[in-house]
Image (cartoon, rainbow, N blue to C red; front, top):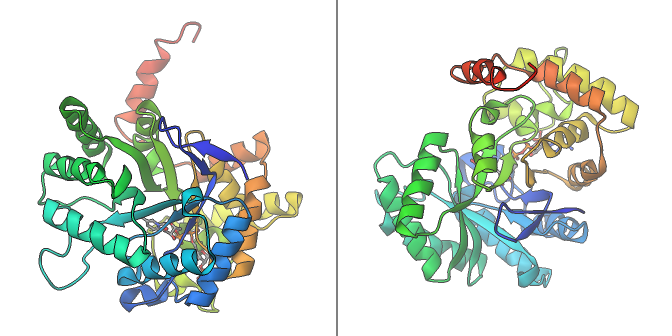
Length: 342
Ligand SMILES: NC(=O)c1ccc[n+]([C@@H]2O[C@H](COP(=O)([O-])OP(=O)(O)OC[C@H]3O[C@@H](n4cnc5c(N)ncnc54)[C@H](OP(=O)(O)O)[C@@H]3O)[C@@H](O)[C@H]2O)c1
């Protein structure tokens, strides 16, 4: 397993991160996964033995069950805490109480304490804000995140699902005030979801932040089990029930067709090709893989060694391209005037 630097932090994380969103199965999470403690122990053991040192969870995954199961696995497997980078998140609605959600200082502090209790840990390595809280000011969020790091309960802070302008505004406030800045970004990125290439991925490179793609298989759609001829996968596949994240399915079927040919050339699966493509994109630090069983996990881990050729990358780029959005096409057009010889 290769390790990449998480932005400019000096922290090394495996190029694959193991996602635990399938642990538990409480409430609406049932359609995503219902993995038991024993199943989770086996998947975590395999991940760690394969060199994965980065594990991703969230307070909201099965309303705390994912964190609880992960914490138990760390204990059951007697893993060395100091060799693991554990990430969790805050923002989702954790209960009926109106303050048991969002990014207020009140909730961030309560949520971190609750996460630590469930994980049975004394610190979280990366705490991500899981999305935008439309009623808490960015300044308040950054102040609270700074202060939670000061308590020693959190080591680094990160951001998921915020528009680029908000991330940059937050960095600016934190920098001016001498507060902790975001060090990690976690966003949907796959062959069927390349929106981050407009502004978020360039932002992560310009700010030297780690970039962690989530749903690299678009929730299983890009695994090869969905084709134009076979639009329901069956067997309890998640996208049959829970059609997320939103993608252009017509284009996704074209992408799958191209991947089928590439997979054959490499004696690999379609899922492995989709994961290799994400991993090989410039600026990607660690791809967050999900797996419902050991076979999927083994396949996903093996994708770390799959190298796609230049022509294959070009083919995939072409079939998955989306029209440039404004002002990005104007930036490109005007930029070409500034490159000598063009
Ligand atoms: N920050 C955020 O907002 C956010 C959002 C979503 C996820 N995440 C993180 O990202 C992680 C990964 O997300 P994801 O689960 O959506 O990733 P994904 O890779 O897009 O989808 C994983 C699903 O695809 C199917 N699959 C996986 N490997 C396969 C294989 N080799 N062959 C065939 N099918 C396969 C499985 O579902 P089926 O077998 O049911 O098809 C599996 O549950 C999560 O665990 C979580 O940690 C973060």
